[in-house]
Length: 105
Image (cartoon, rainbow, N blue to C red; front, side):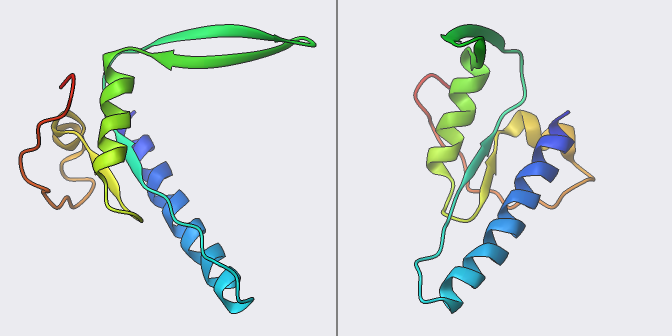
């Protein structure tokens, strides 16, 4: 589902940009975000938080690498790992940020 993840991130950026334009028109500060996407296996941990509410948290190497990609992404953009890029070739146009070493990568 890497294509779905990228489409979701693109849609988020589009909607956030539109909303930020409205905020600017009102004299308010715009909102900005960045996204990091990696493709791989994760483990999802469930945690009961009380009152019958359950939170689900993905953990593992793939999740950590996606978080590192997010930190590397310029504001307002999406950074994807090479694995995700290869799986999505032909669906999207990618711009290389060049080889990058990340902790745990």
